Length: 383
Image 1: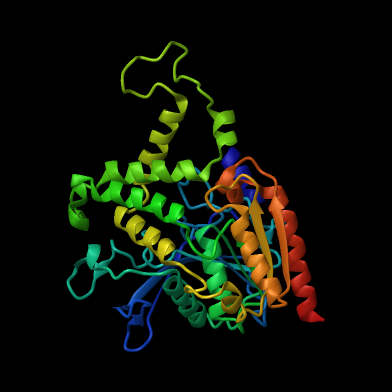
Image 2: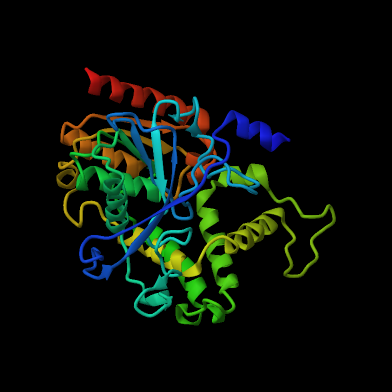
């Protein structure tokens, strides 16, 4: 009954759609030079597209996200991953805007990725799937919008890896993007960020069930993927949030068992996170997407100021005080480079104890900022 009430107040039941396309001759040229096609993107839309198609907001997801950003699927126990931000009266108000969210290529939730069937072999791609980049993800999204007849985007918004896509949208398609909202993100990974991803990849590849990526139809590398997720999840939280949520609490009120079973609540929580992730994500997709994150370099080893000179959008950049995965100084670097180019940019560091995950949790502060920003952008467009 409670779920029914939530549905009535929000978007209710939504469906995932699928679009298949590629540039002639039916393949998209990737940044690596490899070709991929045909390509299918899973996507969802919320709200109504207005007559002149000027109210489009593109939402781009983080590493483990997908097209299901808001509303409910039949049988779901939880709504989409950003349901608290998308819907009637919310930050991305579906009574005003037409929201689009697609699963990235390389993903495993309906878009073409390593688990997809290679039309040339009739078998899953596995490691024969070409390496993809953030640029490739954005290029595929552009093809989707082209197919939908959309020429302008009011805003493109996303957190973490989504923020990287936002930045790439702004410089690759400057005439199309009117405003950009990169949240809790960076223009390039540091050595530490690459190292954390590499440990996760090695955990997967060290699992005997990985079998060189050829595990489809066999036993999946569950242990390796669960461990990779456990490592990743630690980086999404902050020291304070973990202390407040778990501290040194034991699973039972008795003393530790003096063995290697899970004694502490935090151990049990991480195991739960790892095990549940295995049920919804593909290990090879995890390898490919984390590698795309590590390859990302907006400035391409040049000056960030030069790279962002191409942008014409208005920017709202949001960071969080306790985010140690993508700390605030990385957002400030973007702000500084935009200001050097005399580009309209607003910046806010939101006080939060939730760490990197704050972009999924801190609803009130983000909503207020985003609502005002989008209203200003629309007003200036109409003026």
